[in-house]
Length: 90
Image (cartoon, rainbow, N blue to C red; front, side):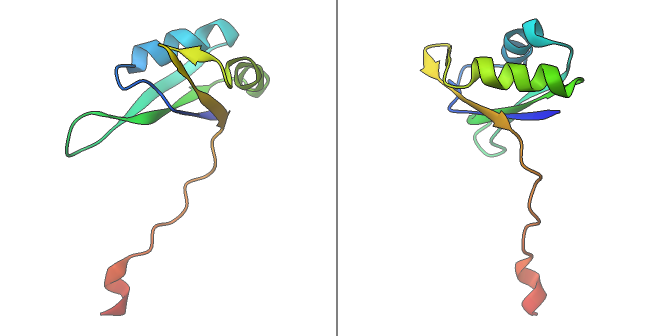
């Protein structure tokens, strides 16, 4: 199950996400999204959990909780939408 986490403190690292979700079940991966130009956190990330039931429990427990002094939003990740290619009009 893929989980979206928003409103993250800019100092949070991948390992911090891994540690926050580990008590709820097996974490496959944890990734804070980094801006490619500034090399800083964009304030959101994703956690993939092996078991969907564990993921749902983590969402219920961690949504609107405090992480590094900020209240975070935790929800099931939506499938990524296709980006339009502006070169199509040429």
